[in-house]
Image (cartoon, rainbow, N blue to C red; front, side, top):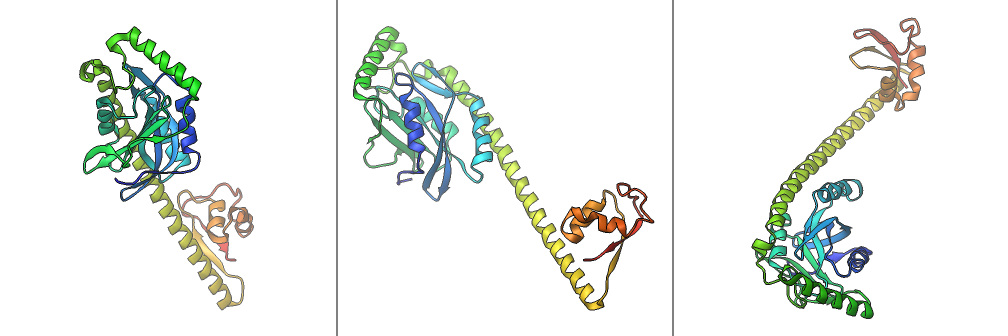
Length: 300
């Protein structure tokens, strides 16, 4: 993709509040929206529960279930379009680990990643360009409202102290990660990534199945409504042609009720008494119908 994602109102506010609330630690979240060709529209940002280890983050398993629940309940027809996370005190550049995470969890194009540094107040978008994960815009860094100036000094000092205390276990300000290779420093996170990817695929299949079932149900309802309207037209035409009241002789089938018959014939189940009054000699109890029994239904 070559164009910056389009953000609906309020999305960046949610991201900035989440990132600024955690000044000296990395946080992340999921981006929901719609895609069309190579363009992305971000409709919502969902702050997520993450686990941080050696300066890298992993999404906890419950994140995916919560995300898909939100998609179904609040954004039907939308999808996961990417993620965001913070690099406090470091340039907004994807680390090797970030790239692997994106390749595993957000491999479909167009899927985007937003990296933000609340200390330098810089941010950058990344996306798939010709099969490679690259900056989306020509200027890699863009400004967002981050930590106030006095806060940035405090955060930078805290990060420096944290690096001094952690040694090679942490990360250096101005560098993407510690000299320790990510392959050895975050093997447990890579394992978690694999587990989360499987869980995300399973939830994605469940979501697709649910959406397909909803579509089938909507199609059935539309067909039933069309059949009911056609039946009502036939009834009106028969009544007009006869010039008198018309009744329909109906053989009761499994699951039939007076309420259901009234819904089909009159358009409302509340009219079931009309059918009952016409069959009081046949139906001692309006709630008991026998399969195969013949009743008369006055047509409207």
